[in-house]
Length: 270
Image (cartoon, rainbow, N blue to C red; front, side, top):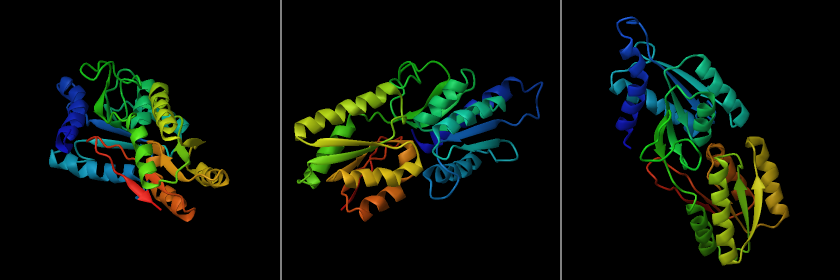
């Protein structure tokens, strides 16, 4: 989906209610709630995306503070806070919620079945129980998705090709990144690939940014030969730190970044 089409989708959802009640509420300004697991600083991709979103709205005739309002909510990598913020947006009666990533979309859907939700870069919206099917989503969720659990095994294969001595790979992951079925699918894929490649796996879970340094200490202690980073909105926002920690510990690492266009960004540090 092109950026312009996406912006039209969001603003269209926001405008439906005001247009339907135009005769009674001519002064109503559509309100968009923006929900993200990221942080409100420029090092986080969430803020950069929002900062690009606002000028794009202006191109379509929507100016914040004049004929549209935005309410931004940042969870700072905390899933529990994400749920609470979703509830706040619903209580504030926003006209549409823009959810950055699957966790934000899931939090928003748990908070409301009535408010339209436009989600950016969902993993697998069907397996994560956000929509019924891709052809007929149903419910109140729409948006863009990258269907990539099966790419996890390919990343391990690439890491093995790039680091032939790889016998033990650490897997940095956030267990609550996506729905249970999506996470189970990724685990199944990488475990199958590891068996084929005769590579042992060390799963190192992180719940938030504070867990990263202990996680790398555990990898070094277990003598990992390389690192694969599972897709996760929480981890995406921590890439600069993860890259630095991998480099400081001389740990070859492969990273994946899902995008709405289904493109993958690959980075390797040695």
